[in-house]
Every structure is written in C-alpha cells, then in structure tokens.
Length: 126
Image 1 (spheres, one colour):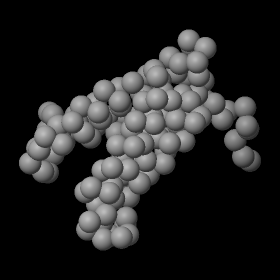
Image 2 (cartoon, rainbow, N blue to C red; image 1 turned 30 degrees about the vertical axis):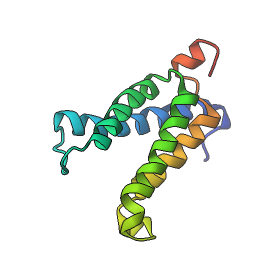
Image 3 (cartoon, rainbow, N blue to C red; image 1 turned 120 degrees about the vertical axis):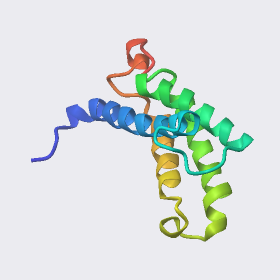
Image 4 (cartoon, rainbow, N blue to C red; image 1 turned 90 degrees about the vertical axis):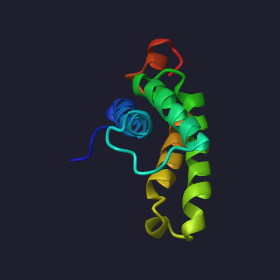
C-alpha cells in the first residue's frame, strides 16, 4: 500500500532533516575531526566547512530553507566540478556521487521549501 499523499509535506521535512544532518556532519568532520577528515585543510575547505555547518544547521531546523538550499545546491555543484570531475567523467568512478545527490536534493528543497515540520512553516513561509 503506498504512502498517502497527505504525508508528502511531512516526509519532505524528514528528508530535509536527514539530508541536512548528514551534510552538517561534513563540516563537523572538517573542524572537529569527528569522524577524522582525511585531507589537509585548505582555505577553500575552511569556507566549505563553514557553509556546511551553518547551512546544515539552518536546514536541520528549516529556517530560510529555500535560499539556504539554493546556496548549498550551488556549493555542491562547485564541489563536484572542482574536486571530482577532474578525476573522470563518471560520478561513480570519481567519488562525486554524494556531491551530485546533494546538489539536486538541495535544488529540490529550494523549490519545495522545508515541509510541514520547519521553522519556515511555523512562520507562514514554508
């Protein structure tokens, strides 16, 4: 039996929260080593880490979801083209699957909003 359509806004919120928590963990890894970050930090990675922590936190609670998700979509696209695409054309081979998925999930959130369980919805902007 399929999930009723009346659950779509709630499941949108669940997807936003889960994706944001995992994205947030990328920034936490860069700054606090939990789990250990496998690369040397560069200025570009510091900027990415700040965006991951701040943007991830805002998306976890669903505040300013549309503009934050749009920014994170662009950052994920840039990450793919700067770090992964030079390694080869296929995301499965160049390690860029997560960046591609983040890019398009965030693009969807930029259009769809934060869902029923978000600060934005509570403010009448969801």
